[in-house]
Image (tube, rainbow, N blue to C red; front, side):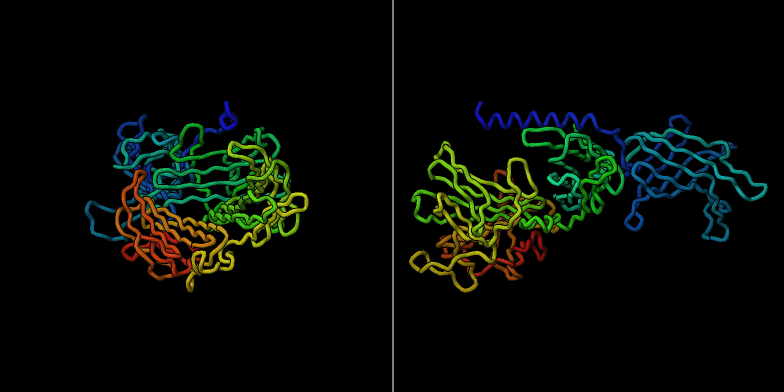
Length: 544
């Protein structure tokens, strides 16, 4: 078995072990009352009686509206009406009747009297079964008795009908509408300092069919930790030993799938905490629009970002003519990674310097393709990788050996990057407004979906090389047709979407100097709002 296969097998075994601990810690499943609970519910232990239960929207908040079809103590048919606030799997309400009104009477509020006869407490076990506790109310009028007196107690209810087209999972995804926009958020949680090397993060994903929420903890002692959402314990995270350190996670999904918990709460805009006993270890306000929290100011690391990747290739100083390498910075929503790779140099140790300060050792070993070595830093910390506690952007990156600089480059990022344009013989100088030539800088951003086409996605990429600059926009998962590209509010071209083996996709690529079938890149997209529009609607957008 080769090394790669062994690593995969080990990782699989570790995942099974973590999963086993999670399963052992799973609490009993509950449900949340959603619009899918709307329908008729019968009382199987009573003849011809039941509830018309409806989930309604009252000023953006869910409430339950109920009609109880029953009989009074004399055996006369009657119905009672109630409205109450929903709290996950329960709802309580007063049940009232109306007196003083005759059949088909004209509107006349003066003849109408509302009388509360009982309080009802609904609890649902699952999508098809529940119970209602009926507590009769005392009537204060002298000589008047409660017409349902003596009928109190707990009654079983079972679903009789449901709304056409509705399916019930018991989770929050049942409330997702067809017009909902796909959402995906990752966020790093703040460390309170109890375990300084520990880190935690959570991830939330929602589309029109599924909703998922996951919390992961790393580099804390083996044991059991509580997950709290807005002060309510939602489950336990079992942290176990793995080859890469200690880790544990808890996963929720709606509709529920094997080995996960049913997601019956919405974590968005809530306080997420990981606790050991009553001690808070990690905490974060889940604010979906924030894109994640930045690393602590004291870390010195570059900020988190929306999947921004920057790569620069080293310049060879001539000490070792065959030497080459690259520097890459990846800024994601909950982590930042900085990696330096070198190859085609003799076996041995090489020192990495950032702005004249030594940051680590790169060990070059034999590989199938020759000699190579790498050094990767990360924030938050990860076992086996040095902590990224410095910002390499705009700094001189050097690889040295025995006092000699083998490779070097100024790590320019984004709009501040780029070297002086080369002379015309190497490809020509960009025109006015075009990004400058540079030493192989790649910048990529992913579009934000505005919700007009929920499945739409795409990316924007700028490549600055020593003798050419390319700017490319790709979109996918949108209907066939033409889409207009706008940069800084100005139309720059048309993207034609066609069928591909994996779905629908389209792209447009600009270049300088101009290449065959590519529009001339005569504008600078850096720092501009990039939009993809159709029929006046913005489908995708991102500030590049």
